[in-house]
Image (cartoon, rainbow over all chains, first blue to last red; front, side, top):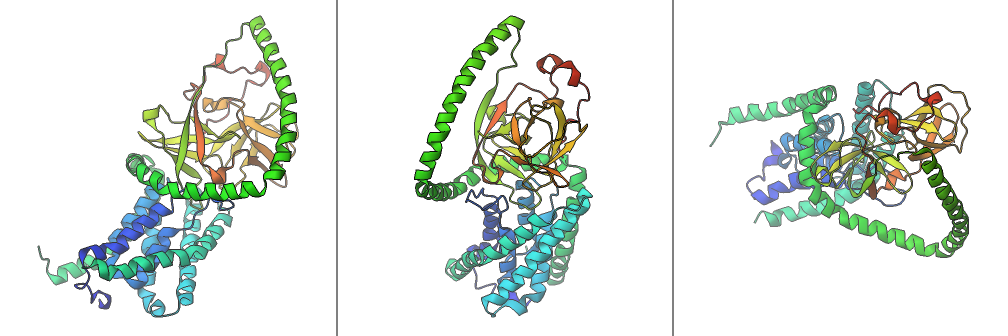
Length: 173
Length: 293
């Protein structure tokens, strides 16, 4: 795997950064934002973290960690479909890892566009799954809103993750 | 311990499809067998509650600050409104006092036994599902504080939902907008029974059983007490739209829940018949109890 070349250079702590930030982003998406006119729908921070690390350091965010993060999200947000987020995040990781050459060393706008595509696919998949399980086509409004708000917040999430990313060499000791 | 390279490569190649398969399986089977995860969920929520609470503090501070700035901007208008409201409320107070004494006299007259005393506990919202297909919140009180499953949660404005999951230190409240929420209600003043069904939109649908009196926008919706999960006459919301579906705007601001009150009315699922003060003419047709997921 070409992207694991630097493995020995990074220390244990640095290698934990992608997984840890992904878990932190899962918790972030659960916090009750009471900001006026924000609504009850929070941005999908977990999706941002999985997308970001799948582009830049997929070797440090193995499928097992993605699965765990998705499961944690499902267990904490009280969904009746435990495993759905894990499934969606794993599929996003798989898709992004195969396409990561398209995104790396490109301007941020390309990355953002790619994330928009991932968010549309992820939330459309969730919508289809929930509609199928409820045997009732869910109103797509919330899903569209969540896709848009997640995409709109991606630069913030991506910036925070990039800060953590830049700290990794220092952490490797 | 070193594993040989080919074995490791095979394991690595298989991890992804196996995990995808497991998550798909869980997502499909979990709904069929909700108990499968209930215990894990509750333990996890209890464990992470302090973390979520601490992490939420800055957010509460920021939103309070924004709220303060907004309040300062509108302080004059608010003052005028409050003066008017105060005048109106003083008149109502007068009415309430008169009714209270009249009520007491009438109760003495008929020897009416009041319903069990209610106790309530304030709870802070520490997590919000935030998902597109979920409407629930996690609060920082649980079994240790005497909360039990099914108890209603309210704000000062009206009903929020009910406790569906219970840990020692946390409780999950299913909001009345969630697709799994079905609440027996009546249109105030008409005795017209209906179900308020959430559909994940901000305004749940009102579904009638026997429409006799036409319902119109502005009608108040209160709990009916059928099924024994909620006591009767808790304020729920107001009818807002009538085109095609009757929709109800909840009184409580469900998008920005911060503190809720979980109330113990001493109900345990099915009310003793004597505790429901309903005239015999509308006593029939007990509605379906609110069903969880």
